[in-house]
Image 1 (tube, rainbow, N blue to C red):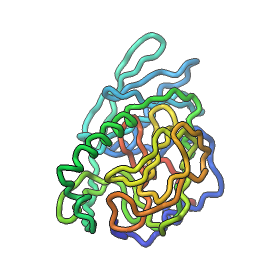
Image 2: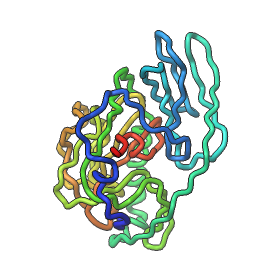
Image 3: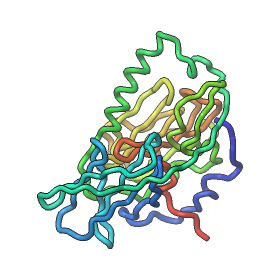
Image 4: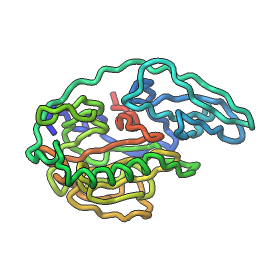
Length: 277
């Protein structure tokens, strides 16, 4: 994790003085790694919608029902179909996805094993990836999901979302979250209300907590020094869930924060209040 910005997340995102209403929508960005908002108008019952084989969150605001469609980083620009079922009928909506360029980040990790795992680690990585895929595929019915996210910690932004990463000279997966540089032992808090779906020590992610906010919306907190919640435990927005650390694949102490929407990692900042002007 290279410090690529001296701006604190608090300054970048605005100092929060309170949480907005639960159904305050995320910012729309119809690009790979972004969120598309698809509106359906008013109806007594919410429609259901699927992007590919993944069901997507549908919430209601003053203008009616709206789908929050997570767009994977690997998604090609162009037109993509959203399948919708409402009032016993099905239709297809078109989502137009624009191209987006993400810059490259180069950094070194002292533990070469975390960059080029030996054969004895590959089985563990495969097992962990299966569990991660199961979490990504979750869809828990929850009519009142908490969209009023706030940063899980205050610190320097040291890794942007979507960066094309070169680690120890080797190309690796794009950065699926944001990194916040923090001293070991800094409190980490739930970005929104939810239920703990998984905790554990992962090969790449280190000590991690997954929170299920309902309707396919999941947040992930990685590289913790200590985990302070258990699977199945409900948590409130802002509740302490652990302490930041330097576990897993890191180049220094920090918190990695991911937001998943219908299984796709999307830019967490889209769910945060806009800076005040």
